[in-house]
Each structure stands twice: as C-alpha cells, then as structure tokens.
View 1 (spheres, rainbow over the protein chains, first blue to last red):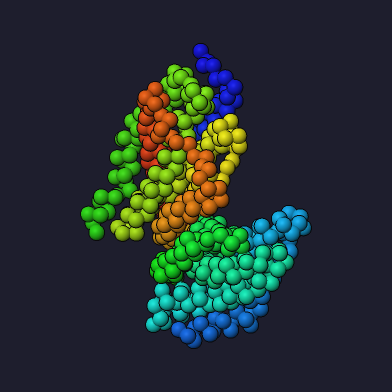
View 2 (cartoon, rainbow over the protein chains, first blue to last red):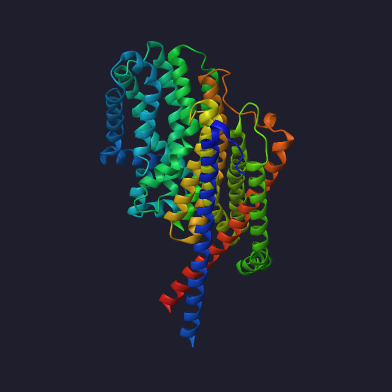
Length: 53
Length: 218
Length: 243
C-alpha cells in the first residue's frame, strides 16, 4: 500500500502532514466561526424582534 | 505651507526627544553591533554598509508615530485639514519635516558612525550618497504608515509591521549601492533604481497618504 | 445607486453562496483527495529528485493560491474603492487569512523540499524571499483590519494598504531579484519547475491546483458570509444599545 519513499520519506511525509494539518485547521476554524456567528446573529435577531413586540 | 514647515521643525526641536532620539538610537545600534558579531575589523568593515543602512532605517522608523500623533491629539490636524492647503501638500510637508529632523541628521552623522565600524575609505561617498537618495523615500513611506495608523491607540507596533515590508525595496537598493561602493564595484544600476524608487514614491505616495488621512479624519 | 446595492446585496450574496457552497466544497474535496492520492501513491519518482518530487502537489498549488489570493484581495479592494460594495470589502478581509495560510504552506513545503535538494532549509533565493515578504504583507493587512473598530474606516484603509502594498510587493520582487544576483552571480537555486514536469506528474498536479482553487473559493465564500453576519450583528447590537 505505502509507496516506497526511499531516503526522503521523512521530508515527503512531514510536508504532507504539515500541509494537511494547516488546511484542516483553516477549514475547521472557518466553519466553527461561521456556525457561531450565524447562531449568535439568529439569537440577536430574535431578541430584537421580541424586544420590538 | 512654509509656515507649517517651520512650525513642524520648531516643534520637533523644542519638544526634545524627537530630534536627538533618532540619532542616539542610531549610535546605540552601531555600538551594539560589535558586541553581537565580534570586534574583528575585517568583518565589521564588510558588514558596515548594511548595518549603517539598517540602523538608519530603524532610527527613522522610531520617530514615525510622531508625525501626526501630536497634531491628532490636540486637534490641530482637523484644523489643518480644513485649511486651504490641500491634503496632499500637507502630508508632503509633514514628510519633508520628518526627513529634515530625522533623515538629514542621520546622513550627517553617518560618516562618524562609519568610522566606528571601520568602513573602507572608498565607501564613505557612496554610503552618504545612497542615504541621501534613500532616506527621503523612507520618510514618505513612513508618513503613509503614520497616516494609516493615526487613529489607533498604541499603534506603534502596528505601524512597524505595516511600514517595514514597504521599506524592503529601498533598503535593498540603498544597502546594495553602499556595499558596492565600499567594494569599489560599479554601483550605477543600484543608484538609478534607488533614485527611481525615491522619486516615484515622493511623487505618488502622498496621494495615498492624503486619501488615508481623509478617511481617518472623517 | 439602487442597482448597485441590488447587485451586491449581502442577503443575496448569502443566498447565492449558500446554494453553491456545498457543491464547490464537495468538488474541492474530491479534487484534492483524488489529486493528492494520485500524486502520493501512483506517480513514479523523479530520476533526479527521488520521492521528494511528490511535494510538488502541495507546494505549487499553495504558492499559486498565495499569489492569486493577494490578487483577489486587490481586485476586491478596487471594487470597494470604486463602487463601495460592502460585500467586496468583506470578501477581501475574508480572503486574507486563507492567502496567508497558503503562503505558510508554500514556505514550509519549500523548506522541507529544499533541505534534501539544496542541502539547506532556507536559502535567500529570490523566490523564497519574495514569499516571505508576501507573508509579511498578509500579516500587516490582517493586523490593520483587526486594529480598527469602525468597519467602513477599516475597509477604506485596508484597501489603500492593499493597493500600495501590491505596488511595493512587485517592486520588492524585482529588488530581491536584483539583490540576489548581486550577491552570487549566476548561481541560482531556483527550481526549473516547468522543465521538470512530465505528463505523469502533470495531471495529478492539475487536479491538485483545481482542488486548491476550489478550496480557496469555498473558504472565501464561507468566511465572507461570516463577516457579513458579524457586521450585521454589530449593527444590531449598536441599535439595541441605543434603542
């Protein structure tokens, strides 16, 4: 399954690991913040409407 | 406009700090370099042009936040903005005042500091020439950075972060010119590039600085 | 004015992007997985570079997106300055961290690749140096956004910074080229990427580039939505406090 990376295995694997980790952090951070802001906005809007009533 | 210039100059001299502080900082940088890299004259003379350029640049950076900060705090910047002087001229004058109080003293003092770093004999003229061409650009770019951060409290660090990348081309060509001059190499290309950058920056950047200042005074 | 606001209506932007976002994100995921798996498992080694050639599938796309990200921010800033679309300014803000991450990936993979190839993690090669400077520009841009409270002021100032920064980034690129040639004549460390790439490497690389582009678009859409909502919430909170 694993291709034979020879003497450069460390370099190749670490660059894949670091890149994918960085991308994952970026995506997760974006999604988490998107969800939180969306939820907060919805609750604020609801509160505003109740307030007006 | 001339009145504004003389006012700025007088303030810089009288307020203390601003005027001499840059020079003192420059001296400290030059003094610290041998402590960090060793006292060998051969090594020092090799890196002297670069160190002197870096020191001048940092000393320049140190005084940037004074360009608008005082006028911003006491509200005279708003008055200046409503005066008939166009904003572009205002920021140019501010940059000129900054150069006269920071850049020019640095240039005058540099030969003395170069002595401390045993700059080769042939290097003095190119070094002073390169600083003479380059420091106006530093002042103008710095004025842009100061205009960007004028409304921000404790914006000093941000100002450095914004301005330092913009200083890269000036530093490269200036230091390269001084280095080549010290080694007796042909420095015409670096000199032309440096002059080109300085003139371009002086001609165009005040418009950006003025636009930014207008936004901040809104 | 009305037509402009319809055209860049934040609500419409959210509606439209909400509809296309799953597709773009899905396509990005598929392209990235297929491209990277293909590249990692099913491409031969380069006769000169050995298995390190596999790093190309991360290095080249991220470097491309690092530059294109800045160009996108420049375009968005220009649109904000000329036509005052809030969505445009917020899209520029949303793109900055994505572009900065791409720059970091390009730098890190470059360093890891450089270690076995050139025998050093870092060389002041023009291309590397330019990327480091680009990263500094990203940092400054994001810091300026974060430092200013008023949204419109921040949008104006960062757009001007982006414009000026672009000019200086190009200047730095040429300056750095000159500087390094000045240091060691002719001895260049740059990889001749175009020459190296044979067909076997080319197709998975193309897929990876497509994946990175799609990922960038998806992230920018999502983050722009977030910025729009955050801005709206700030406005609501201010109104609440006043009313």
